[in-house]
Length: 567
Image (cartoon, rainbow, N blue to C red; front, side, top):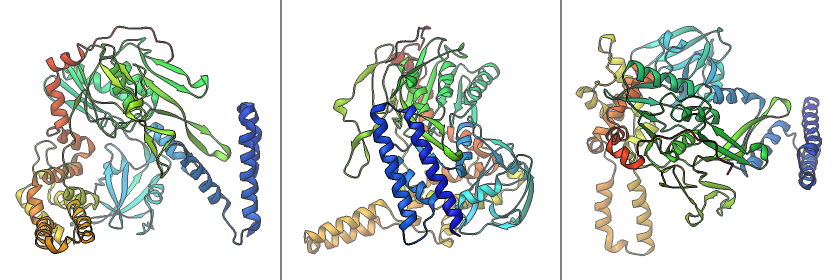
């Protein structure tokens, strides 16, 4: 039993030794000794644990924990990928994998399909969001199986067959589907269309390989076939991706030769300037870019550079603030390391990185933002001030719509998802809802509260949590004797009341149910199309075209320019 462990330990130690020798050529002589010294310490401690520890430890687990703890001292974007997770990297870069085209997630202890992708085997076979996966190729999906284990069973080589047994809630019963896996590529542009006779809309969800081509294709289709004269590019919720794709997307709107972004790292090899290399597709088209607090990295390159060049009006909420660049490097034994190699700087020269991972940390060791007093101000092409270190600040701010605590709980506990599944089950093929005009029937709304009560749904509010804290303070300060009646009245007023709160927040909860029902029949594209009709940020963008845009950024025209020197 000990021989395989000894072999694994020896392999790991050999890898460490090879790394030490490889560092001699890669590191400056001043740091070589320090690095090799600590590598040798790690090796000796690792060997000592396996020679002397009372139990028989697992070498792979120990090393993985050690690596993860080491990388935790850096930034959250520097990540070690063992051989078992190499496929994750390919998916992040390409958006492709071999499978059936369905996203699964545990809900109430059962593995549930929460989304199916249009045009792929799951959708073609008839699977729907809300279906519960019972077995895969005869293997029962156990309650304690995690998402990755189920996904591994569903994924496989393109063309291979898989049999999936599901339970369709609310009358569908058990169904079985035999499908052939395919190469699934989740589109970077899940929806594009016209908002009105003149205004096009493109939603870009991520920056994977080929995403610039998808944006260009959608842009040309809207312009040439639908008569688009102005465009809203939506980057909300887009966490970024490949830097080259962001450069290519900016190039769709700016002339060849325009400097778009530059990077600066520890060594000269990471000091690069990226310019527009091709002819733009829409150099003169009025453009609005939407961002929010989840727009990060490549999204901030696109929105920040278009803002710096006064080429687009930025609307929404302040972005995330990730100004770091990662590259993936091959490591020993078919493992990979995604490592931060540089910071990037938008066209004005600013770096929008919010948190300082280089040493500015709080008492708990968490990275802090750079002090406002240390931040520099830069200027756009037309002289408007823009600040570094705080993400991309929109030209026009639109607050995120309020979400009640009740709706948050309904979403977090999948109660709303479950009820949308029940409503969709009552709609037969003759009642397939139109994605835009569908309205929840009054009977379905009135049935929501009894449904929640039957399911045992309960919730608490932030107000009650604050009230409990207040009670403790009142007790400590010994005011409970004079405030008893007032506190009791306040508690009665704030106590969660499902019927009352459903009435108070009916509009937003109805809208959320309707969007989930639309998802069942029209998938992600239909859900996005519907949401646009009531989206305050989109409506604000429509109002901003014309005189307001011209007053803020002029006409947004820029001439081709030579790349500036590295900053």
